[in-house]
Structure formats: C-alpha cells, structure tokens
Length: 456
Image (cartoon, rainbow, N blue to C red; front, side, top):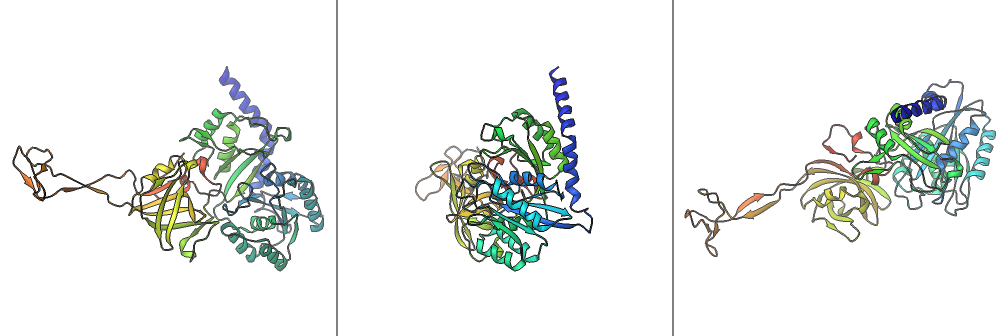
C-alpha cells in the first residue's frame, strides 16, 4: 500500500507541475530560436541580497513574472564570479535575463528600477545593488566579464565601461553590484551547466527547511552522474540545501536538463512556491588562472600551479593540513582546511619530492585547495638489515664497521639494503568532497580521459 501511495503521489506531482515544466523546457531553446525581427535585450543584476536574507536569483524570478506580462522572457543565466572576493554575500552569483519583443527600453528600465527599489535587501548596509540593460554584447564587455570572474574589479572600472558602451544602468548606495551585473550579461560560457532552483513560500522564510532525506539520496542514485553535488555520500550528508535564511529551498545542478527534472520529481519536500531553471557557469573551473598567464601571485585570485612538495605536510590545531610547494613563483603555502574532511588524508600522504599541480584560491598568501593532481610520486626508501640468502632471516650487526652476519648460517653482508616503501597514493586527480566544493569548481565526474579519484 505504501508503495502504491508513493507512486500515486509522484504522478500527482508530475501532473501538477507538467505545465510549468513544459514552459521551462521551451525556454531552454527559446532565445536561440527567436524571430530575427525581435530585438533581444539583456537585464543584468547583482548584489540584491544580504547575509540575513534575500537572494539575487529570487529577485530575478519575481522580476521575470512581471516581465512576462509584457514581453517574451528566455532562460536566465546564473553566473558565478570570482569566489575569493571578500565582500561577497555567499556564492558571488549574478543574474542575466534575456527579454525580447516590442520593447520600449525606457518602459523596461522603469519597471526594473521600481522592482529593484521595492525588492532588494536594503536593510543591510553591505547590500549595494546594481542593474544594467544591455542592447549589444560588445567584445569589451566580454573581456570585462572574464576579468570579473578571475580578478578584482572596481566600480570605477565598471562605470568606465558603461559610459564607453552607453549602457543603461541603475545603482543603489555605492553601486558595486554593477560589476556583477555587467559580467552576468557579458561572460562567454563555452561549457554551460544548469541549475534548477526551487523557492519557499514567503511565510516559510527563515524557518527550518523540510526536505525528505531518503528521497534526495534516491534522486542522486538515479540521476548521478548527470546530476551532481546533491548529496555527499562519503560524509552521509544532503548538500543541495542552503544553510542561510534565503528563499531557496534547494538547487539541483547538472549537465542534463532532463536528468535534473527527473531528480526534481523524485524529491519530496515542503510545498514549493516557485522554481526556475538557470543556465550557469557552475562546475566549470572558469575561475582558475593558468600559471603561464601571470608573473606574480596575488591574494583574491584562483590559480592552477605546478610544483614540487618541499616538506612533509603537517596538521594544525583545528584539523587544518598545510604544506609548502616549490613553484616558479617561489615557495607557496597550501592548505586543506577541516571542512574538506577525507581530502586531508590525501594531502597528509604527500611527501617531499612529489610533483603535483594544485588548484585553488589564494588568501593571506595561502592557496585554499580545491583539487590536486599528482604528476609523479617521489620514491621513499628505508634501509634494513640484509636477509640471509640461506635461511631467509635478517642478519645481525657484526660490530661497528664490520658489516652484518647470520650466526646460524655464517653468511655475511657489508651493508644495509635499500627497501622502497609503497605509497598510499597513485598519480591522478583528487578533489574535495561535495560538502566543501564551491559552486564554480568542476567535480571530477566531469573530467574525461584522466586517472581521477572523485568523491561522491
């Protein structure tokens, strides 16, 4: 009977969601298939939320509801920017919305400004919203967006670009959000992924989320690896629900829209008020700067660095593990912090002389590790007493500088023998578990043709 009820509830849910799901799938391709005579505009927005509540994606979804009453609205973009920015709220995500039809740009701008005034989280002094409306994605905007993903951009740089390209904009307070708003529109995402975000009823904001744990693990079992970072099986945790008081109930990330929807239909939770599919640059490693592109390492940037381990890793109070890497930039400190859990065992097993590549962000002159690739393991040897070739037992010392002998067989040897110690590691890629993974970091299940050691 229980199984019958579960099946009935599943099909009832599919029936209720069928129309909004069909509209969502239509929007996946709508921008590319729009009529040529229709003018496509992009609305970019960032920094409408705070650590105490709000969410830029939720702001965008509620704006899209107003926009659809007048014009056509396509699939929005959720763009994760430089993850090391010190004044970010949480995941440093900005949103871009494509709109087309018979648009009066002044009418559109007025609607967006009013929505920003009425719905962003202005109770927090660190909230500095920015809004842009872009008619043409110029190459200068693409360059700016790539820098915003990897570097630290200023409001002044953003305003210089806005004036140069004559972009409609609106900002509150110090206006820092225009940086992310421009980047969300301009970023060229060559390997996009998707995230389906679900939102709570406003009456539930700030309360404990109700998501059935078993159904989430079941959804992961069915949809993985086309869907990822829903659960952390190694640590037995559900990881796709935020811990902050924002409107998001949960988010399902993946490469296949249909796999995401399949997982969505399996998961049981409190009632969902809204949901929206976003095209994203999440799980792409787009934030990482190859070492060949820079001459000096700086804080608040993310790098891919090759080097040699120069001393044995050590564990600090709190469970954080550190080691030093010799690179072309000199000696670099690397860290696997306590939240990375089992990944720290990989780091502890490193040895001086190991050739590796580290992936991570630099803060306080320390690289916060997201992944490592072991290129070549150093040979570790120990020296033991020689073995008697007659009886197979270890020889004993015959005295200072007199070599070794077997008392029983009267055999002898001049010196100790070299014995190679087996390593716990093997060459390949290792990553932090899902519980510690950044939105923008690429999980190893997306890496092809390499010796990979993924966490699930």
